Image 1 (cartoon, one colour):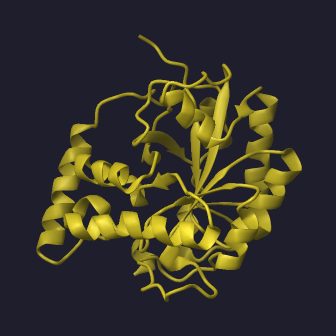
Image 2: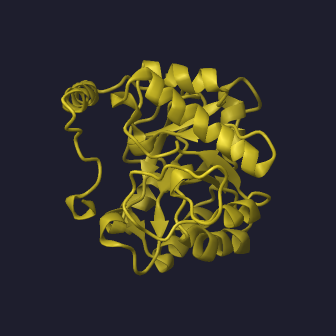
Length: 274
């Protein structure tokens, strides 16, 4: 059986001058604008993530050529750079924020995040964005959830949801796994916490038959060429979900758990961040 590929694009920062640690995962504003225009030029219908999730859960199918835009972490440039470019084109997006990394006043004080220093959104900016983009959760501190003890992972997943719902005054449904890492146990915790969808990375296309709690995404990086992005826009160059977890991914999880168990977790970010 074949499935219509749905590119769910994953971005981090969109900036001309990012901190060194996030630079490999940063797209310049000019390139980002070109990528948005490539989607339009190739006839893709950019739909809200919730439409994909509704389709995965038995609702109406997506338009034949659909795409989804998502952004992880909560960098300040989403407010200053990304949101205006999206608004000018009338495009929806989902923004997953790490609550402990947000700036400005919060209540009660967060215990920070594992992300190195960078300009991040404030709580006030998140509330300003809320009517125009979907705000989702990305844990409290951005850990490797699948290497944490169960209770610690639960606190990250549930605490993030509670904080966002308190701040925004409404239900928040969408979650993204930090670093794309999850496991059966983590996905069960996400489900029990009340999140109705969760995105991974998986370096593949989603589809109408993807897993709602492990939605495949394609990460757009600084080194993503125009030709590669164009291939993705045309449904080429990556596997289409659902597909089984790779043996290498399982081995990598076991290695990271072993490192965490001896109190020497494997670094998830470039060495320049440390």
